[in-house]
Length: 433
Image (cartoon, helix red, strand yellow):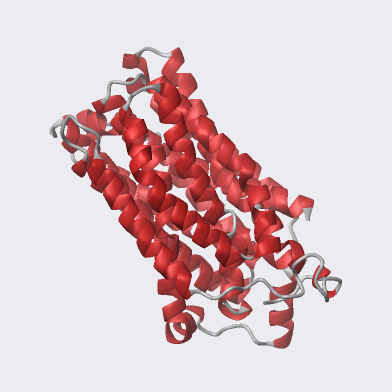
């Protein structure tokens, strides 16, 4: 399990590095380079629009790679999704600016961002099922949480490289070529990830499905026909996590640097420190889910998000680094209370024959609802001299929507899986739920 967890964590870290490095570049430099005819605010909105395309394509990726995962195995998904995302990310770093290519430059950016999202839409399902379907039932949330640490590691890698380049280069050099270096580095990371995954075994549950001849003939059709309500509920439930994370990691970065005049390095440092704490706490929160259940943790995270959005915006608006860090950290602690758990929760909600498709589609539809629009909506409603309370109201509304959806979902923690309960010995073996 340690080797499997490390491989799934490394893969998601690399893929989310690719995804996040684009978000950071969109907040810092892509607007003036690829949309120079727009006003500064409109340029940021346009850059965030290309950012949003990656979320729109993620459900399509989950359908494509989910079909592969449910028909041919979880393992092939891990290779194909990582190769696609890595290649698209390297290509982003090679796209000439608007000054060289004209309108073709943002069009190419849009296409490559679409391909990034397509690959990431398949990655999450493959990596999570690799861990969850190998894990013993009583520790499934713990082991499945390691792929959920990957986004934090990827974010820190992406922004760490951006931070080093931003601090070490002049503004002119950073805008001319420095911002491209993190995209080029994605190629080496992808090759390393593919090598690490080359020795992984297929999951026991898929091998059982293949041996018994009970694989789904058309996974998407079965999900739409028999699980459409579950897909919609999981998408609505997880929307708040995406909204909160991309509000603090993407919109807050642009708002702090463009509107509040906070130094770019300071803003990146505040966000990175909070994300590091969030990543470190993920396995510990997952242990609580293995003891007390998946649904209670998710409900608690949603409630905390709803209560914290207005204080977060107020703290962010102070432009004081420690207060901004406190606001961002509080939001991410609420976030991790939910998202440390969902890697076990979503697979347990779906039957094994359509699990790769159903769990990934629900997860990535949530990205469209919560992640794609949040930076654009937040930028549009954060005008004026005072604190952007409209952003807080928007995020609180999404939190309440997600709270209602989680309330309608069932608990999936098996009675035998909780430590100390009868039957825990049997739960030590990997089991379908």
